[in-house]
Amino acid sequence: MTGVPEGVPCLLMRGGTSKGAYFLAGDLPAEPAPRDALLLRVMGSPDARRIDGLGGAHPLTSKVAVVSPSADPDADVDHLFLQVSVDRPEVGDRQNCGNILAGVGPFAVERGLVAAGEERTSVRIRMVNSGDRATATFPTPGGRVDYTGDTEISGVPGTAAPVTVEFPPGARPLLPTGNVRDEIDGVQVTCVDNGMPTVLVAAASLGVTGHESPADLEADAELAERLRAIRLRAGRLMGLGDVSDATVPRLTLLAAPRAGGAVATRTFIPVRCHTSIGVLGAASVAAGLRVEGGVGADLARLTPGSDRVRMEHPTGFLDIESSLGTTPDGLPAARRTAVVRTARKIFDGTVSPRSAETAPIPSHPLGGPR
Image (cartoon, rainbow, N blue to C red; front, side):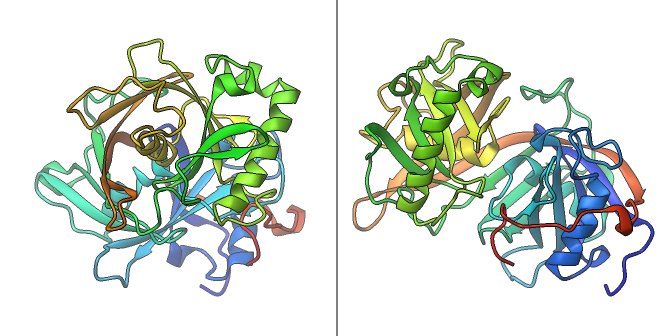
């Protein structure tokens, strides 16, 4: 694509507990800089209210999926996830999003990239951000995506059709530091990567209960500074380098459950406290809880003989199917990870971005050098 049209084909979709704009890669500029500049105009960034674009005024509603046919014989489509900053002219590509991922399969069928089955369709997805893979399976009765159903997920009103997303074992080490526990600034942590680099911290070790509201945790300036210091040190230990301008690793505070789940969680991205918990972050937490001697293992109430781990979060719960095996060296490794999400098409049409003359020039601290 050489020029930018006045209107761009777009499908706005809720994926899990996030909302994003889904595009075919061929409908956007191929180079990152002009593509990101266009997406800022489409989403209405930077502006705390996003009054002049599609984006919502929160990171969970300010996401973009760019989808294309895959040249990989083991994948049907490639999916690039982009996080568009709300109040800064920034677009980041250093992470995946398991919630937006739930909408990629239906979008691929909607756009004709994958032929629909008569009852159900499975779409093999390569996540361009990390090279990881996932398979999304969802109902397509009569060869059409059916978004209606009776599956309910916390944080989303009503019900919808289930989208089962299964992740094969990753190529990266489950414990990227090589240790079950690390000590950072006097705090015991477990660093895990089962699809999302995540640092597990017992809430009590930071002087909080882990059951506070996101607003109360965000208002705690002393906690914010301690979390920042831990995250910066953990990023280097995990091989991520300087993460001061990145959204990974995530930090998840763990506490004993109160509502029948396995554990209570509060997750920070990187300083905002998530109103629920991201899918890939939850996958990393679930795997970490099964690591013997890891942070949180003594807090978790896991059901013997069951792969299901129910994580309580500020607005409900999220279930992850998670099991571990071992590497040839005897280290813990993810064996199976799956989650049930829902997705819903909100609108399918053409979005008109605001004038380029009135838009700021994008920067990329969330995504690193381009």
